[in-house]
Length: 433
Image (cartoon, rainbow, N blue to C red; front, top):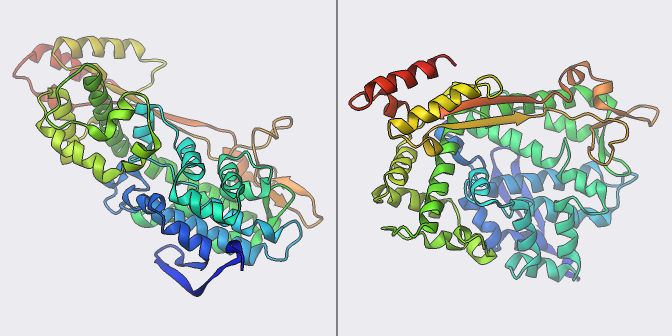
């Protein structure tokens, strides 16, 4: 029997707190899970520094990837099976893309990518197409199969229906991470009725759509996503930890470029510091490695790197103030000047951080190629864009909310043993926000 159709002699299951069980019947999927590139995802948290805010948020991208796969497996094997507009031959492509969609994430992804100007999706493509165990498994399905999987994840595939299962405004990726992140953080607002959503999902020409009768389940999902972003993903304490982590990596890179002699040489970061990130080096990095360096860099001679690492390890995070950069830029300039005068480097210790989210981006005529709206399937077979039928969704559609906060080390400012007068000026300026 050809490899793509080969089944396991006995179904394998993973016990999962979100989906109860993750079912694996295909040899291809089982072999992909066993590759070292996929196993690496066990060592990368799904929510980065969020565990410093919500202590239960220790779950990994490995679990999330299995969850996305399980949702897509249910869609292809149950929801879409024998439905018009669905080609059963796309099943394995959908499952592989779902399983591998996060393969290229680095440790503490967002901070990591920001400092080194990286794109985890580009590394996902490299892993799938390069000299890797994952590529060798996919090649056994067909010579062009790795390319097809990579194109689905990159959203360049001609098979738009399969792409929409993995990447759209209501896809398996978002369904799993909202439910999984809500479970592990312990919050209540990320929950929605996934069973109802799957029951009303239907394959259409180039995307998955939802029966009009299930509109309230879609509304529930949209509002859950909105709440999760502002209550969990953009939590100010989590962002403070991300600010410090970003500054640690930035400082280490600056020191390396300036020929600083590290007590503990950052050998795992050499290619990144040289702006020549090699795939082999990238795959050796995980959060265990990253945390090792943050731990030992507490012993460095450089006072900034030492202090930032100590803060991160011991959760002595920066405090924050609400800040409007459009109105208060002059105050920010005064603060920078005062920070320098009291010997605190504002480049590392006075950080403006912004978060922004668009809960649901609605369809605009003429921009179909830029956005893929959530469409409702009416009883007469017509498609209607969600915000045109839902008053709740219409109220938040296209409305981008942006939040700005200024982060600073309050303990440095409260230490009045030196530069007391100027630090009192700093404290007064910060209180006015």
